[in-house]
Image (cartoon, rainbow, N blue to C red; front, side):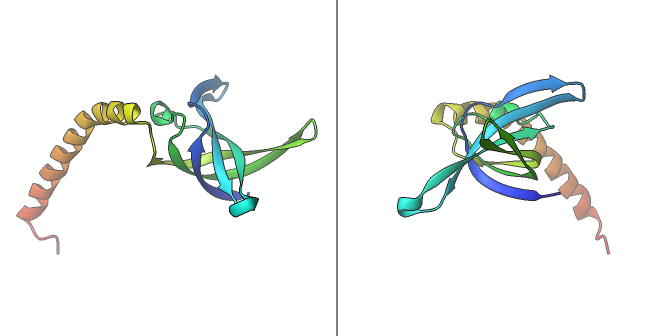
Length: 129
């Protein structure tokens, strides 16, 4: 297996598709390559079996992707793809989208903070060693 890690920006919004094995997210990532006069862009197609992030994977969002690297030939062109095992949101969403993401996660963040505080209170009662 060939494992690769890339950091780049989505070229379009993520799509959720389905096949006989279940739902999966597909998106394309543009990665800068080289510098100066030799600067270019490499495009990777990505398949990710966890669809929970799909709503946050919008055009222009910066992501880090790790997974199995694949290539295929079609009509004389080489296409590169990644079967992702991990996708991390790194930022870079549009201003309108950032507000929406914040509103969608604010309630979850409050719940997580409350749970963390409850665990801290339990741990403070006894010294574990």
